[in-house]
Length: 206
Image 1: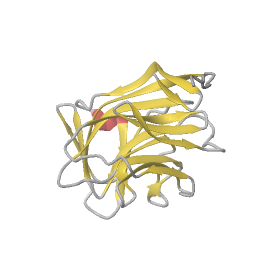
Image 2: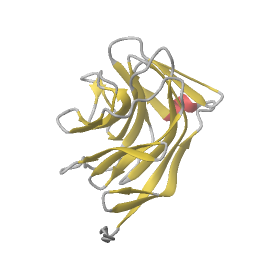
Image 3: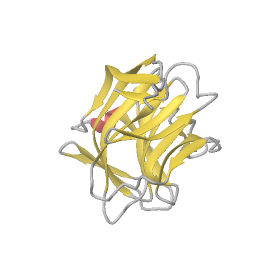
């Protein structure tokens, strides 16, 4: 359970779980980079000044929480990326289609943040949290109504309020990725987010 402004959020129904066992590639669309899995760990490497995301073939409606473990592999220390409410890959433009792209140590200045793609004009970033290479982090991210979020090891690091959140017919995919870096992921779970409004108030004690 965690709080987003005046919303108490809990993980509800488990919608999807990926342990990156044999056959995992049949459940994902790989758009670029080198992706391999061994002993339940997904290893992603992109060698150019660009990025590659992989997207679930399965789609997820409404409010969701991504819950997974991620690591930057030394000597790399940038761009452990992930995406939600995503349409996948735009093959005509050879770029990510509409969605929220988030990440740790990104945007060339080791910022943790979320941007709405492809407009890239709505974003939230935090420069005070910097992930260490070869250290595994527990990451939870997603969207609840108009609020996008990233928690790292249980701490809310980024909150983005979108006045006109991405909507559309049907459902959306989630993605994992990197940009000119080397990363690892494991134990991805997607939950339906359950939220309720709570009354917040200070009680003066002075």
